[in-house]
Structures are given as C-alpha cells and as structure tokens.
Image 1 (cartoon, helix red, strand yellow):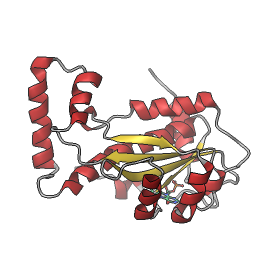
Image 2: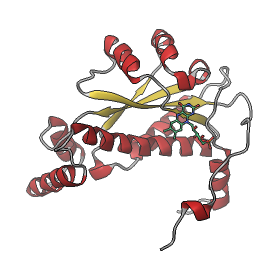
Image 3: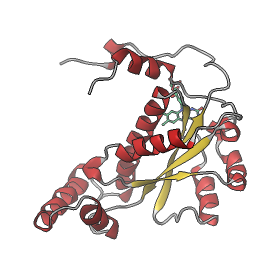
Length: 220
Ligand SMILES: Cc1cc2nc3c(=O)[nH]c(=O)nc-3n(C[C@H](O)[C@H](O)[C@H](O)COP(=O)(O)O)c2cc1C
C-alpha cells in the first residue's frame, strides 16, 4: 500500500486543535463509523485495549458537564461528536477482563495462555512497577488510550474533519456526573481524555508552532 506522503503531510499540517466548531455541520454516520474503526484498529500494549470510548450525545448530560470542561468551553456546545476515552482501571492478569481479551478476543491457543499471562504479568510487575502503586497501571492504560486518540485525530484530518483533544477538565466533577448518570462506575473506569470532532468555524488563529527537528530528534 502506498498513500501520497505529501497528502498525508498536508492533512497533518491542516489539523489543529480546533477551538470552535461550526454547530451547523454534522459528521455523517459513514464518516463517524470510519473514525470508530480507526480507534478500534489502534495498537495497544499486548493488544489489551484497556479503555472504552463513550460517545456523549445526551444534551442534558453535556450541559451538566460543560462548566467542568474548562478546556472546551466553545468546543462542547458546537462539536458534531464528542468522545470520552475512559480507561479500565487496575487491569491485571487476574481479572476476568484479561481472560476475555486473551480467550474471546485474541483466541489465544490453550497451550499458549499461561506463557502469555506470565509475560504480561512480568511486564506489569517489573516495567510498569504496579506492585508499588496501582496508579502506574492506570497511567499505562491511559497511554494506550492516547494512541487511539492520536490516531483518530490524524485520520479525521485526512478526511477533512476537525478535532480537539481535551484534558482541560475537572476530573472529580466529571467522574461525579458520569457516575450519577450511571455512564461509568468509578471502581472500573477513569475518564482519561475527551476528543471533540466537527468542522472548524474559523481558520486557526495562528500558524502552527513546533520546535525544530534538530531539537526534537537526536541521532546517536
Ligand atoms: C492530550 C492533549 C490535551 C489537550 N487539551 C486541550 C484542552 O483542554 N483544550 C484545548 O483547547 N486544547 C487542548 N489541547 C490542544 C493543544 O494545546 C494543541 O494540540 C497544541 O497547542 C498544538 O497545537 P495544534 O494541535 O493546533 O497543532 C490538548 C492537546 C493534547 C495532545
């Protein structure tokens, strides 16, 4: 497969963190389905996909969330679609979720399951150091969610859809609201990051700024 590099770069240059969307323009079902497939195809460590994506449509819920999303004051009321990436908390090889992924999703042959379990357990204990603090495990899950976030924004740009990732929210308040509406159970989920999608109202206020490649990349 070969896709024109210059077209891909154009899309990456065109993408920006959109501050306000055109509230009259909606993403088609076909395009939105494409974006969901991009999320689904995103890589994750050991393929565990330790996150879920909530498509927030309920107007009352969004109204309630609005004051607590300080980083999305204009995006929230104008976006076509709003995604919340929530991690699955504290996932270890001892959870039913792990068995589900290993057996039902990945169809791991029976004689390989133990080896896989040990491999992942060692990684979690030694590299992620979850034995010291389960927050390390949740940070690890968050990193996986951010890969899907990056992919969906890039793919969106390639089909002319704008996006804005949003970490600017008061986590406790958002969790409280989502819990009271039974969207998430804080025992199992933690809100990681939002992604607002739609079509830009205005062109970006300023040119993209990036540090130079020589500052970013070191060839040793
Ligand atoms: C993880 C993450 C969280 C972000 N949170 C917010 C946010 O809460 N509100 C916002 O307007 N922009 C947010 N941004 C956008 C960044 O400020 C923006 O990507 C950066 O300044 C580079 O600009 P560009 O994306 O337009 O190239 C976030 C970006 C990332 C990657």
